[in-house]
Amino acid sequence: MTEYSTSERTRQKKDAKRTAMMNAAVRVFAQKGYHAATVRDIVRDADVAIGTFYFYFPDKETLFVHLYEETADFLLQAMEQAINSRADLPHQLLKGIQAYVNIALYEPAVIQLLLVGGVGAVPSLAERRLEFRERLVKMWQRPLTAALTQQTIPPQNVRRVAEGYAGAFDEMVLNLLAYPEPEREAETAVQEMALFALRAVAYAGS
Image (cartoon, rainbow, N blue to C red):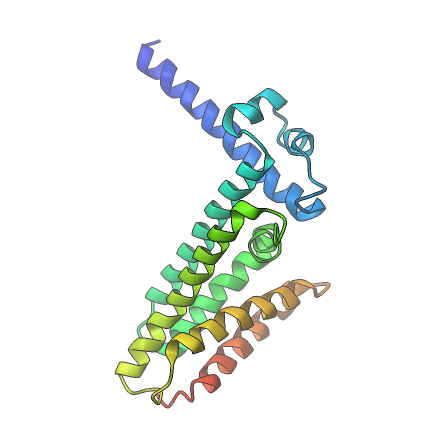
């Protein structure tokens, strides 16, 4: 075995352990909340030694912030790709909301972490949360600005509208996840959210 293949296999094992801990942390934080969750809970769920945890992260708070950043990137990338795959506002809204709801259904712990987890409990997270919210607002603002340029919506403050979208969609998704069988309500919820968003801006396109 060459030195390169040995070092590559070692790197892959390390990456797998880090991924296992990150995935376990999402589950543990979602189940127990930030304060109640412990490092021992996380390593038990990930099936790694406690020393392995401290090799990657100095403490629970650092892990939580890393986790928040990665899940925020994951959600925003999925939604942006969906929005960018369409050219007109109705379909951009529909696809973006659909991507959000799909992630909420299949990775509810991720949504719980982003919208609820650590609120007020992790001081170092405050700036990251503001950055995430700003990116989310700008993501919704871009198709609105394009619609304004195309004159398919009347003159309005699209920044404020985008802020409203971000908050309203979060609330609707959290309420959807509270249903006993959210997957049965998902398609209707996506359609209703998209219609709500179009009515809010008085969309006049075809």
